Structure formats: C-alpha cells, structure tokens
Image (cartoon, rainbow, N blue to C red; front, side):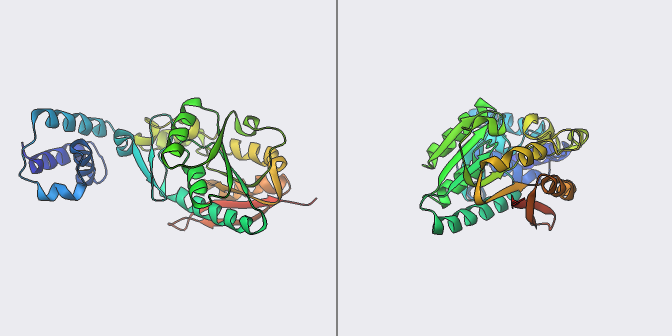
Length: 286
C-alpha cells in the first residue's frame, strides 16, 4: 500500500469516526510514524510502506479513531514555539493559554526594570508550559511551579530540562506546596474551571483522555478561583499581579469572587475569538 493509499483510506476511517480535519490528522500521524516532515509526504505519494510501517500507522490511526488526541498519540505539543512532551497526566496546552503566557512574561520583563530577579509562580503547572515560557522569555526571573500530581511534575521537569529552563518545582495542593514565606511578583495559573455538569459535554479527546482533576472546577466551575482568591494575596509581593485563565462563561462570576476578597480586578482580556479569557488582578489596600 502506498502513502497516498494510506492517506485516503485512513481519512475515510477517521471521517466516519467524527474526527475533525481527518486528512490533516492522518498526515500528521503518518509523518510521525515515518519520522519525516509532513510536507515531504507529498513528494513520496507513490512510496510503498513496509509491513512494519503499515502496522505502525494503522495502530496510530485506530487510536485517533478512538478519539485520543493527536498530541497525546505523538507525545508532543507546541506552545509558544516550544515543543513540549505531553501524556495522559497533563492537559494538552491550548492556543488561548499562549495569550496568558505572553501577557505574563511581558509583566515580568517590566518587573525586571525594578528588580534584578523578578519572581513568578505557575500554580498547577501540568506540562510546565506556562512556567517554561516564562523562564525562556525572562531568563533573569526566578520561576517556581507547583502541582498536586507527581506524575504531572515529572513531565514538567523533563520539559524544563529539554529547554534548559531554570524552574524550582514544588508538589502540593495549590499554595500548600510552597514555603509560608514565599512571595512572588507574578502568580499565573490555568486552573480547573469546567463546571462538573459540563464535563460530559466536552469532546471525547478531552473528556476521556485528559486528566479530570485538571478540568473539573466543581459544581459551578469556580472552586479553584475561590481558593486562589482567599489564599493568594499572602503570596503576592506589593505591586505584584495575579493572572488567571478563565472559562469564558464564568468570567464575571470569577471577577466578583476576587472583588469580594479585596482584590482589584484591573482587566478581563479577550482571547482570539473575543471571548473573556484572562483575569488580571492586584491586591487592594483595605
């Protein structure tokens, strides 16, 4: 069977399974199996696959047909031009989170004008995507990252090592992972924010193959924001900022939680689709 035959047959298979952009997905899987750039497939349409190659591709396509994400199958995801390892213990980084990363590292750069080594914390780091983006883009900063899951931290540490990012990792439940005296100029987080009832509405790639603990934010999706609002102020330096990714359907409710805990909500910024996605806040003075 040639490369073109595999693409055509596998595309039909994934289309019947309801997989979005089935041909593009097949091309990525085939390029991964053959260890060649995807565009090179077009120059090799008539190449016949060996039985071993065919079996390898078939296994990958079947996994995608079971709605396992492309990134989990290939074990790799792109984030802010960084290639990061991902597996079933961490969320696949989303493009929307890149906006949070960029906003966060620009703030740390501003802090660097006043402080030789600005400090940042990525709370619930998962794959390490936010912490690594901060460390790579602001190398003078002292970056910390925490997660309750040791398996997720193992992924984050490996990703940090790959990109030579200096990060101090902590294992524990939110701020309990940190020394009581820890203070940061920036706290950034993409916490679980899907209301429990909406979990069953998520795409199978997310619902069945990504860690529930990183998605489920409780009955109204706001459990983790309540905890961050109540506890986070004690860990923020004077003049520091808190930046959080939001569920676009719960943005105003989240902002009100922080206001009630004496935070000043400076902005709620939109994502690529003009949906409210990033909350920026600082501690009030009262």
